[in-house]
Image (tube, rainbow, N blue to C red):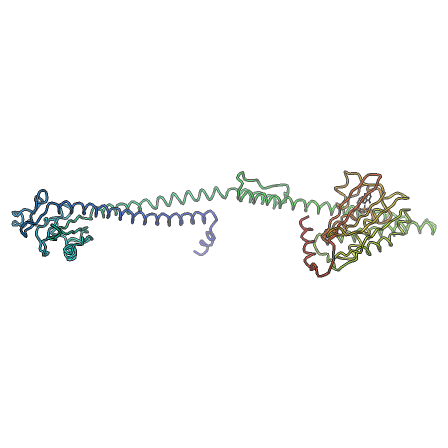
Length: 505
Ligand code: ADP
């Protein structure tokens, strides 16, 4: 029993919708039925009362008082049981549904005339006493055998004096029967209407949920690993289409992230293999033991430089992998950016001299940013290494730091080999190199330097851009939010913003 219940509960959304629709429909039908019944009843009662009043008026018009005696005229005098002969014969009472129901009472409340059918009616005393005081009376009463009767009583007047009461009644049996018939037919029809409503709502719910079924089908295919799939878009511009569009955007995002990750792993393995191969071949050469000490020195220097490159590559990869996971902790301290740039330029001076490149720094004012000093140094270092490495002997590098509105702007411009326009959009991609064969001695040429620059800058809430011309040189521009006073912006908020931008990117 419990198992059977568990199988149908919780109910499917279609059945739930159908049940809700049917419930609402049943309530509405019930409400409508009750209102209709009440309205029908009132209308019937009103028309019955109006008819009774008209009849009473007609009958009263045929009655006069002459010398303290009630005199009947015309049609009223001909009513069954109203002539004296009938009165004397004592016609037995008849059914209220068959005869005319008229009764006349004199000014003392004593019965004067009554049709045989009226005699079965139980007459409430106030239906006589009230009209005798001049106020008409109307109400519902019963016959001796329990049938409902509507009764109207009014005074008989002559020259403003009340000399009797006329009472007119009508059986409510017919009205009652009509009402019962209406109720019965509604009760008989209701289950069929409800059943049709339930079937209709089930069909509607099924139709409305069809697109969701298609979404699920596609989601299942995607779950199977096919990230190229997209959910079909419903034609109507409704909530479901919005859901489908959002899902597609999400899948596209996931697909891109997945492809990027796959490419990153493939590229990383490839990049790691090259220095390892070089180190192994050099080591094998050394093992041959055929070299002079000077030649050994050269071989080991080559091994050392490859190992250094490998080490650098591994640490770059680690930084990016951690950055992807959001695991890198960035300090949030106030950093004098102008001093930092000058310090980095001082450290690259030796390399610049080796490449016969001159580096000039222009700092117009002291500027501070909020961030991680070591990471920011890495940004400047990577840009400077590129500017020197991808330069020609005799070339120049111009570095400037300035505050512009709410930002610190760092410009690293060189007169080097430049970058063709086609490569510019990909420069910040991981492992992207314009010319993989060209290797500069200022650092590695793993193609990760600018990716790291971009990540650090974005994590600080800034941006980096490049403009370049082949053979003329390149200009890298980094903007970072200006840090004026420590209490201006809470550090946590600044990093939150930076994180949000990083995820949006
Ligand atoms: P790499 O380790 O190869 O220098 P980066 O990510 O720093 O990697 O740079 C990516 C590529 O962009 C470089 O391989 C180089 O081709 C090009 N590049 C970067 N900076 C400059 C520059 N200042 N002048 C010319 N080309 C540059």
